[in-house]
Length: 174
Image 1 (spheres, one colour):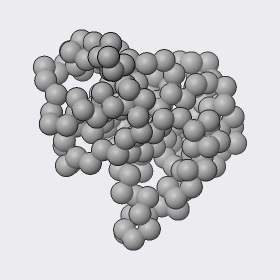
Image 2 (cartoon, helix red, strand yellow):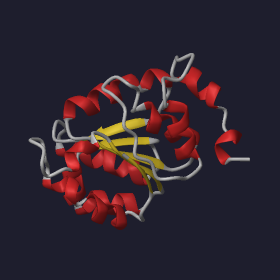
Image 3 (cartoon, helix red, strand yellow):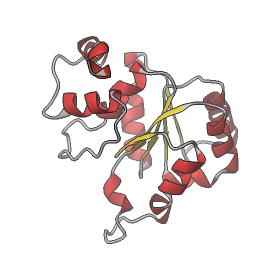
Image 4 (tube, one colour):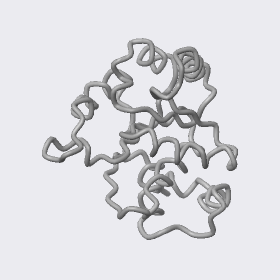
């Protein structure tokens, strides 16, 4: 029996106020729950975020979501509290004290999901905090930003492999 079969996917779906999966979601989520690396290609609005959010609440450890834009982080983050999901985001819209408090919260195990920009890995304090917790899943949202050929290339995306090694090479979904 596959590990994913031991999880209550339908119960987790209800926690997100959903009644069914969109095309491809169940397969991606099952793949992640079975411990496989995953590249998920879906259209805009296809439900990619559920593919890492659901495993985040079903397993121990932190799911670290690398996202390119504060607006994207905030949009996903704002929807999570109503589902009783312990999440935070750390970005430049926060004051330094609030950033430090949230980084401390990571090492204290306060969160299931943490949203950051790829540049966050430049912070020694952030990487050290990740070293004090179990990063169970690394989710690279908007993975097309890794490509140097696009107009939206960010150099820190090309360093995610190095950052991934620094935090223990967790299972990854992009």
